[in-house]
Image 1 (tube, one colour):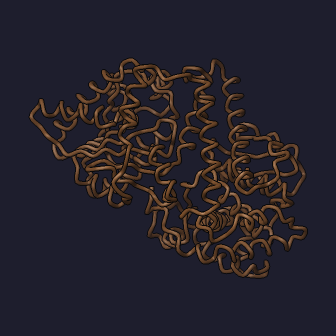
Image 2 (spheres, rainbow, N blue to C red):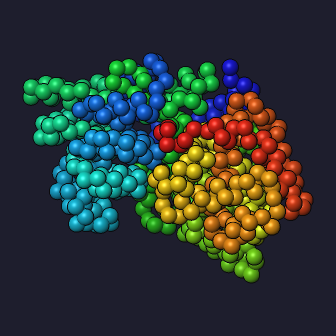
Image 3 (cartoon, rainbow, N blue to C red):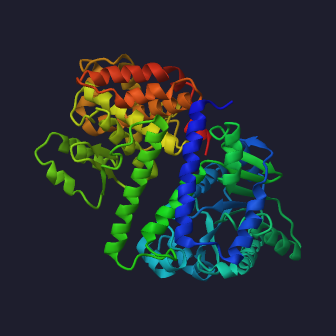
Length: 547
């Protein structure tokens, strides 16, 4: 049965979700009648599920089908990543894949073809198809999907007939898309038609049923699979028995699955953040660039404050001064000028180059390189640890390296409090990357090898006389990458142990609040952290085994 820490976390999560729903209702009001009926038909799909399944089982099922419908939550980049993760394992064995996408109008098929041939760059393509006016959701996650299709030579078919906010023509849009999908299936015998469409559209009685009917009229029957993503109803059903952490894929019935890789409040937060950054009651872009930038900064601040509140609530930390922090982004590096002449500047500049986030206690400032709720939660933890007496070490040396490991561990622990589905490279992944048997850039492989070299010294808390420590000290950027990678592994293990009831919240609270009065305090803190998690580190499953 779920333990006290799990129940306490669920209470915080439910409160967070209620607050997000209130905020969204305040902005949007009630659903229009056509959308409400359409949504209720979709929601009826999630009354129950058959069993917990696995990523491998889902991929094998998709390989054997003719058409797969994958539900897309447009503001959640994890939803778009799911498509790439599926395709990455399918294409090597089933290379004849046609990718059908909702986000481009069918009338723009010629422009899409030109883009896929490399005849237009991103800016030109987005301008020509009026992405902002006809779709408007973040481009980068969809760009990654199209880049994958281009790399593997997949045919891409535009399926949409109207702008995303045309709620009165949902049925007409589905019928149009069904004809386009049927055309693609008949024109490409033997191909897998991989359809990425809004999650409400892929309910069985919506687009899939219309495709079945369209193909039957043309004398063709097909095998199909529906892949939903992240049902809130099923999430809370799993949570009742403490299985929400273990569920990666649910089999809901014959040919129907649901990927569960993002909790419901993260989904809603992604929508609310997009809506507020877009700056309009209808989801359109803000009227001018300055107001858009202000909306983005306000959104970052609000998300950081929400993360601080969640982590502090889970650990029962003091509530005073929780929002005494500001947020800066890559667009505003003025704070570096305020630190001119200090030793920390060189390390901060390297962190910025490496795309890492950080907290500067002297300025009460969190730096986020991009919109990323996980990184916001990590730095919320750094802020809370600073309130408890810890200071992030910006200088070199092995004790400071250990301090950064501790901070990154506490940060990843906090990010899993906010989003317990967040994943990191485990030791098995790092070993495979170091050996060249797993995907990774040259830089990632170098970090992986350095992690394996440095880990024995971290376990022992050895001083900088160790050869591993000297290697780390020679390359600041490498040291920053290695301390982050090790910290994530330890923080992930710590979270799992707390939820399983094997480590108390009190023990974690002490890591956040016991002042490290001496530099050697980081060594003691690192050794205590390793003592807590060492049994769990080796048993973590590879991040590639799950969505």
